[in-house]
Length: 578
Image 1 (tube, rainbow, N blue to C red):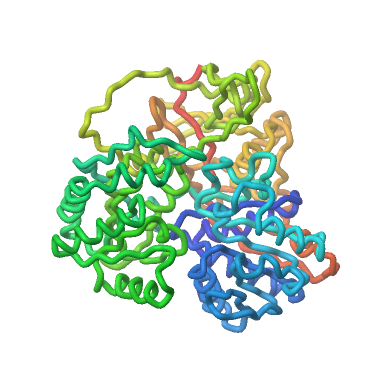
Image 2: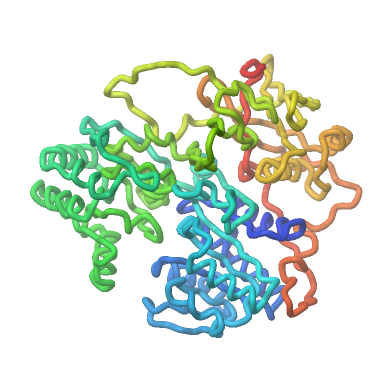
């Protein structure tokens, strides 16, 4: 019997919980190698065993993911009524109750696919931000058949370079983030492989490369980076750092650049192959199989190995591709986070300055595109509550976050930048207090102060905010009072603090000049028992509320174990704020 990890079960529970109170299209964010396929398969099995008449479609861009997701479904539920619709895989099983499909194959075939109750979109970050795309047209056609259609997106990176967060903006397909599993917590819990980084001596100079649509101009980037001397030096460093490592990936800045990198590896005695978008399917499959068996030590590619590529043994990643895209950066580095026998960690060699550009992968904050228009003041986003405020503001009017004072420093050339933020440390909680926090012109928040010996640490829970900040506050409350309704106001919350379980420990880690609370531990049976506690997911009828009017009985889902799976509210130590 396969057992879900706590965060995987928490993700499924969050989906059910979302549809009890919302009618939008939620996102589920799980890091690369965190097991999105298993989450989807387990969720689908639960839905269909509760409502056998439901029709579920799983869509993605990538042929390999279609096959992987289908295999995960059959592995979990061998008798699942599952089929595939993909020209690349040579199958068109349009009437399967669980249909795994490629958007390229079905986007004009909504009538053939027919009535669908639920669509799961894997790698949702690949959907263009424009309102008129093959995804949008296809979903609109499905909604014309069934107006009660529900859409769920799954991704490791809930943002795009051209439109910011996937659930924000005028044309956003998705409306909310229902659940997010932080990559750092999964690494610390042993579910993902640690990442380590070393600063190579060779640097790729992109100072004269222009940008277009928010990223480096591809042709100019390739010309600047694809230099014989630089390639020789970079490859030599990769070989030196990788002597004790078995499986290497090199992400390059263009097709010719990747070929030159592979040729240089060959000249230095290392077996390296290239894979591109136009590599024939059989050749590509043979190369990847040989790489996974260890017969090929290195792969060089421009970018096709960022999504749907599953090689757990990868223990060295060379970033030879500078990018302004935070999502691409996270996807490239994420190829090294899978666990494998004999693999202690994955080494990231950043020749491209991406860590400096975007920060540690667990702290990446995507840029929000400006709304445009004349005369508007520049803005920034509060890291605590996601409020958009004036760039000149020193303090967030909504939650009280104090922005660090600007410091002008010149980094030494040989600085080593970590690809992961500093590891959290755990502190015993000796007391918790709650109070109302008011800021002029902003909404009130619930201020929670934890005592640990003589030190205190605070966080601000934004119960009266809207959007993602409210969702995070709701998750915070449900973790401490499962089964109790989430308060709509700070006053209501203060009247119910006796219901809240107190963490036995909190974890803190450096974040700029301050400390932030990054996780919580609860002692067994720490949660007070509500007078009347409903099931973990409540009534699931909302999820199956299609135009068919299914009235199957509800099905409970085991709640996730308390721990670090929930999205933490960003905090700093007391004294770090006014």
